[in-house]
Image 1 (cartoon, rainbow, N blue to C red):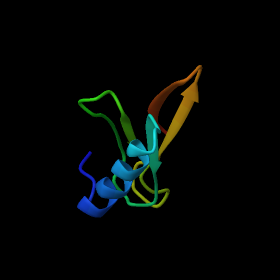
Image 2 (cartoon, rainbow, N blue to C red; image 1 turned 90 degrees about the vertical axis):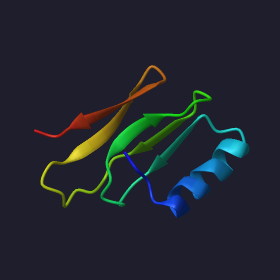
Image 3 (cartoon, one colour; image 1 turned 180 degrees about the horizontal axis):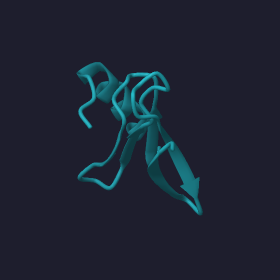
Image 4 (cartoon, rainbow, N blue to C red; image 1 turned 180 degrees about the vertical axis):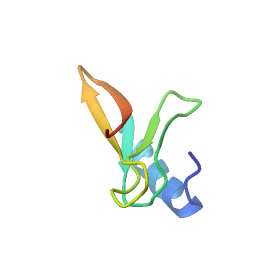
Length: 68
């Protein structure tokens, strides 16, 4: 996943405030990225894409899933 610089900058501000996971959406770029410091940047993408993705959080763990 490659986020636009402005989205990554926005996520960094939340990480600086103490958040461990930042979830973005509606940017059409799905992905789940674990950063060097263990922080997680997640993006479900968009429901209008050819392949539809969603994020699932179970017992504190986040994963990216594809809708079938």
